[in-house]
Length: 279
Length: 333
Image (cartoon, rainbow over all chains, first blue to last red; front, side, top):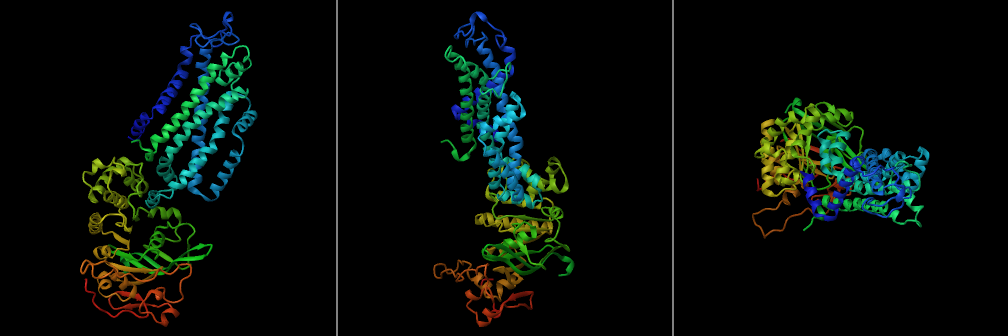
């Protein structure tokens, strides 16, 4: 019921709705990519290295003669995975911690929030580098690192919202009906703080794609032969004076995905918040 | 009234909140009891300690509250103040429940009302929502909501204020409690709806034999509903008695002041409203003698020196005053 209303309002936010369609398409494409790509991503067309976009190689080829269009499609898998894992860890860990912290208060709150402060005091990308450094360099570990650096933001947000909601009379009323803290948190607090968390998740999704690309660009994420947009950028970077066109497509792919996540977040914020009603 | 009929007994309840400026004495030595099937009204102006008293019974005051040593709230012989949390949770919502002043915000906006009413049943009787449904429909019918089967899926924003208060009452009655605390149940509603809600409460009281502790500052509501009245002033019960006696011949000047300040239709435009002059004393530092001393037109030196003792008068009336009013008959009863 509420979901329907939300989707209808999102529909009127054109840009956000387009972004949603783009992201869904991206997810779909990255799932079916292995079955639809025109070339083997490792196949080398040595007669056509560093080719410009043409009817045969839509996005051209790289310095080893591999088809860029194929690699962009497959690289989407890494990006989508990073985005999803990057928001799943904070949703599953950060949000419950934040709700418990905000609802319980006292010493529990103090301990949780000091840990969160400690994590937040590191620059995000540096922390991600440190975590991948400690866990070992791989795409999977980069994703976990992204999840860890986003967790404090979600915990903070959930805590702040909980502090507001826990004073609501319906929470008091639930206590009077004899509900325990767990029940109250699950049934009464969480549903009422979900909207800002959904918005935050959308922003974080795009940020996670960006961080994954950055880590892969720095060589701390996807390792060859794994394909990722950041890795492709890195490879293109070394050829920048020979064939600058190679940077174009991975760059555009990252740009569009990050923009889409941000537009969707903005649109969701408007669609969810009843005070920002359209006239 | 025999001892056995007593379901709630509050004995020398003193509660205070420690603050940086000192102890805020919210409730100072109050005593009262509620019998089975009785509607007791707790009357007083804002800040007189009505809500703290109610929340003490529910055990839901802010955790900083301090109760004095021999404070006792005994419910069917068990002390609620020292009771273990787990045990208290079983009583809350099951045997003692409460409805609030503001039905607009006392319902979870994201949950259909059927689910919310079923909540106490699920918690206390271990039933699933599905098996509690029948009872929920029955409850909604009891509080006078038409076509209750169709209303289960409604969200609070689809209901009017009066309907929402009915839902709150249904939720409070879900487990057949023995005591219902109604904290200003009609304050947020307009007058015609007020009358309907009071009717619902009265009918339910008759049908189920529940006891009600009605907290209000509206003497009209008291006259309509209550069997017995407790008048509270700055944390103390200054007068207690059955509703007719209190309205007919109040002995405490404060009670008389409250009665005088009720707007009357007769002679409208001729008289101004008679307010009680002054304000409630600061609970941080209560006066030595009678708390009402500075606002009372009957006060003497005696009043500022020592707090008046509680005097029993003949007809189940008690009051705490050095200079009780003469017995007289107020004209409006």
